[in-house]
Image 1 (cartoon, helix red, strand yellow):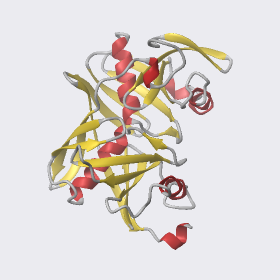
Image 2 (cartoon, helix red, strand yellow; image 1 turned 60 degrees about the horizontal axis):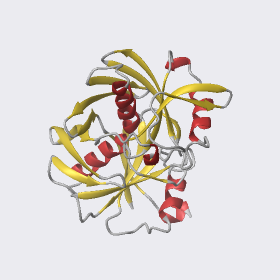
Image 3 (tube, rainbow, N blue to C red; image 1 turned 90 degrees about the vertical axis):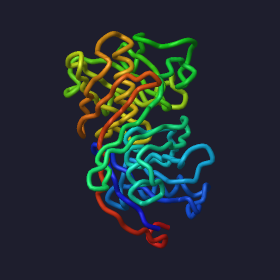
Length: 280
């Protein structure tokens, strides 16, 4: 099978066309775990697979490096969009993608027939604890949560996948790896959580680091960037359009009438072929 290695701001993926079902549902999680192993295989934060859709132009399934399936991925959907267009799977510059979260609409920016940037309507945030899920009722907006030996002010929301946002004074020196793992497996989040650590630089800029469930700390997270923006807007910390600075680069996030819009790059690194005998 042919594949593309891609990344969105350093958040890297293996992308494959599985419309013919060459990777069966019973094997796909194991494939993701094997292929995403760094140094022993292709190596990536996740595996993106193309499927036919009855409700959109195309369907995306996302598998984390540990083999678990994710509902949605902001950096992944930009890579997926570029892959589909440049491989002729979708021949429009505006199209829809079915995900486990819901149907997302994307707009492509082209330079000499190559996709240089992708804008995505990420939808509206869901503030209900049940959407994460998170223990308790109602919402969790700027509330105290004890994690390990510390108490943090947190905001929980879903951008199609679950996030817990914590605003801190200096994200560069914050122990994301040790604290992020405690957040991910906290008893308040029975299905685990993406931990977002955000620093508001000014009303137009946010600095963000992300601990992703199933992936550990990643260089970027599109849904996490949108979650940090949504939480900052909810707490009146930023304006309605910001630049989110992630470890791997910047995303433009803005409020729209029908949701939050994310715009950023997607890059093809190389393409190759997989040989089943080398994996199993």
